[in-house]
Image 1 (cartoon, one colour):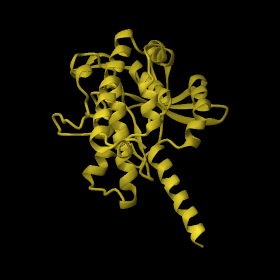
Image 2 (cartoon, helix red, strand yellow; image 1 turned 90 degrees about the vertical axis):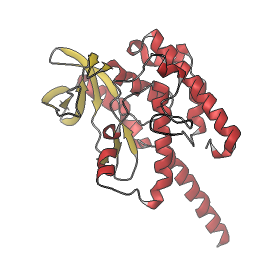
Image 3 (cartoon, helix red, strand yellow; image 1 turned 30 degrees about the vertical axis):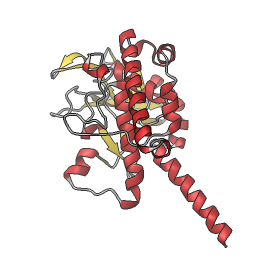
Image 4 (cartoon, rainbow, N blue to C red; image 1 turned 60 degrees about the vertical axis):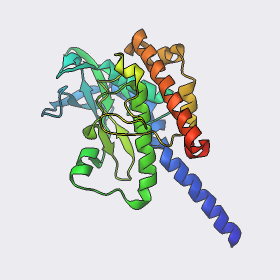
Length: 275
């Protein structure tokens, strides 16, 4: 009986470890190649433009159909200065490719697709229960048994936004699933190259305009992949979606991230920082 309890306990710990790492589930990720090919070749059978104050880039929700299969996608093509920010639809694609390069799996498949005679990014539409904004406005409490994985997912979001220099993460572009996983959308204001985006991190234990927002616990596997990034590996993964100075900016931010992680390990112990 005691042996069975030990096995059950170990299996429970392993399940929790997997749960706190994965956002898109393994079965979702296994389907990505199929859906990428679908998005590339599917016909656009319906479209509706999304407006409002929170849809600054005026994206379109497209209905895609091929061989009797229908899925939705989010298409956008902002380019240049809009609403006081530099926007770029290619950054949406680059964010997905970077997500895949480091094995994060928090960003849905995103490709280049022409619509109405214009090039833009098309992201596979994913369903969610609510945005972080709705969670906050409606005072929806994270279930106690989900707080641990929720916190770890939040640290992963900060880690990723630090790496890609995303200056526009807000509560409306963090999607929450019914089982309390997090998806990240809207990356057209990423891959910044200005001095303030390569000299300091957006999220840090040292704080910023919103106070300290550390990357307290991170998966060792992802940290190791980010440490191993090179100009050539990023260029091979992201292709023409990123310019040379944008890739170099990623590497500079990577160095800042590694430095911060090393400081956290020195202060808290490696076993309390990396899992």
